[in-house]
Image (tube, rainbow, N blue to C red; front, side, top):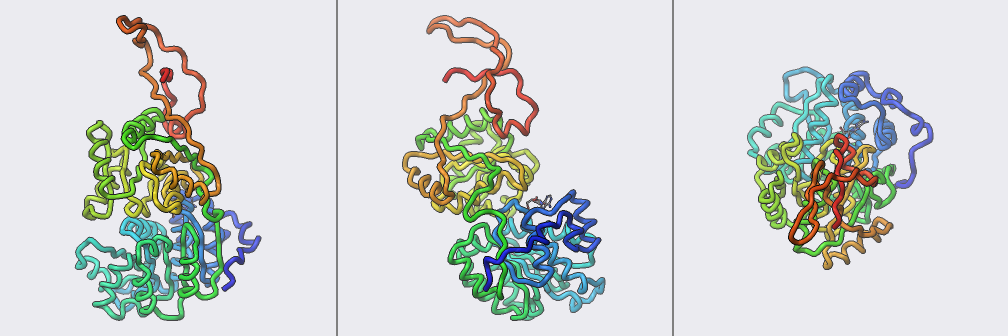
Length: 439
Ligand code: AMP
């Protein structure tokens, strides 16, 4: 395989989606979505996919990777597009595998938006939901099928011909699928596909397991990369506060208030910890919701919806549940607990600072997590120097100042001291006069 070969300078020169040779109906859909220029991964991957190459693409969440594979895939399906009512005229031609339901739903939503002017059918299947509705969609026929591996195998078991006409296979967030133990399922699925097909693999990080997967599933793939190996998006400000385990809740509340964070995704390592933190935040009067693998699908979608609509300020999540969550302009990610795997740190902070926007990642590090912090620093190859917790500004106007233990004097708040504006506050209207109190 010639992984390591990069795209040509000519492709780099393309500046618009039209330059990439996309169909006018796809361009119209992108226009409606206000996608003005292709992102770097789109510039690289789209022409190569249109040329029929297999790809292993290293792209973090937030780089526009979904459109990078979905647009060329749809373009290649245009000759198959038809309005016939016959299911036989709509066999599955393109299969997109994703590790989680949330990501599968999100990818499918994007596919629907991109194909709105094309008579191509699509659906999404994932576990945790009744199979009947999904079966009906599959029976009617779809050209594009987005699926999580386990549920796809359930369907393929009862419909042996389901995947026999697949020409395009996309493995989205392949690293996560391996982390989640999907390798045997992936092998079984690939065994059901025609050998003649185009396969593309997207992964935030590349390690030996991913390279091994590419070797067995892909044919002579080209490698495209938009971020340096194991680096987090440069647009994310990474902040570390050292905090005792018992003080973490107070520290979280303080960070959120002091930095005027409108919304944040807060990570814990375990479902138990996520539930506990969600409850404690609610008790502290902070609108919080929890999302993890043990929650029923409807609960997870409701939590995500509440977050997307701004009703929920802090969404507490485990790593697996957070996969695929795409919230436009998510300003902050908080690591309430550091992940055991440094790669998860990169994934987590990739939830903010998306598509070039600035973002903030705050890590609360207890003494027994310093080893994990060290591993993360080595992995991203840069130091993460701890800083003191931010100060909470008192309300503006006259303030009561504690003068002595027995008496108070009333004064007026001094004008704010000039300080570096926190990233999250930049998303809000300018702050009213306020002064950080002495600690
Ligand atoms: P993804 O990395 O595919 O999860 O995409 C991250 C976000 O960027 C999604 O909300 C996309 O809708 C958005 N996006 C993808 N491509 C573009 C583009 N070329 N211009 C503007 N937004 C985009």
